[in-house]
Structures are given as C-alpha cells and as structure tokens.
Image (cartoon, rainbow, N blue to C red):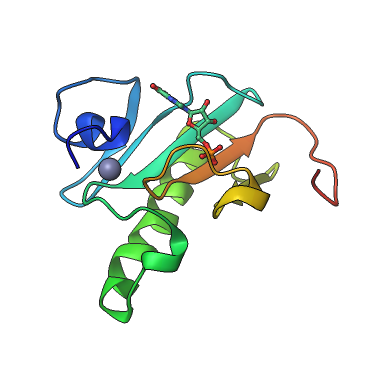
Length: 114
Ligand code: 5GP
Ligand code: ZN
C-alpha cells in the first residue's frame, strides 16, 4: 500500500512518536490528540478496516489490545481508566484506512460517545 501513511510508519519511512513496538504491532502518539493520552496502535501489516479482518488475524487482533494495555500502563492511566476505540468506515468517522486502535485517557470520558 504505497500511499498509506500508517504503512510508512510501520516500515520506518516516516517515524512518529513511538511508544510501543514489536514484530507485528506499532503504537505511536496521535498527531492531533483528543486527550492527554491519545495513542494509535496499528498492525504493521496493512489491513484497511475492521471489516477486512479474517479469522487468521485473531492473534494479531489480540496483540493490538495487549499493546494498548502496555501503553496505558506506561502512561500511568491503567488504574484510573482509559478508552479503546476502533472507528470503522464513514459513519464512525474513520479517516485513515489502515486499522488502528485509539487508546484515550488522562481525562474523564463521557458516554455515549458523539
Ligand atoms: P480515525 O479518524 O481514522 O479513527 O483516526 C485517524 C487518526 O489518525 C486521527 O486521530 C488523526 O489525528 C491521526 N493521524 C492522521 N495522520 C496522522 C499522522 O501523520 N501522524 C499521527 N501521529 N497521527 C495521524
Ligand atoms: Zn497501511
């Protein structure tokens, strides 16, 4: 996916503010943070939306959440609480079409979300 910005981050072409990395997953701070902690956790392999996940991606999906847990712990928000969000397609407001898990915390969150 030559023009995918998150693929460029995954392959090192663009280096964001990385907070976690392993062989399959990268996590970095959002450019336009919506909370004191706003980190995006992505699979290094290009998957455009949640709809494109397959059963073969079950372990990878779990790794995204395990990375989110690490990020929350490292930012000191694990016990206070935080939110994880994956926006899928237009009505959810997805703007980058490479699956990413938002980790948001450091302030009280309202429910329901907008
Ligand atoms: P979405 O709306 O697709 O769920 O979330 C996309 C997120 O990616 C947004 O929160 C946006 O601020 C973030 N984003 C877009 N481009 C960049 C970038 O170049 N660098 C970083 N760090 N975040 C980005
Ligand atoms: Zn991509």
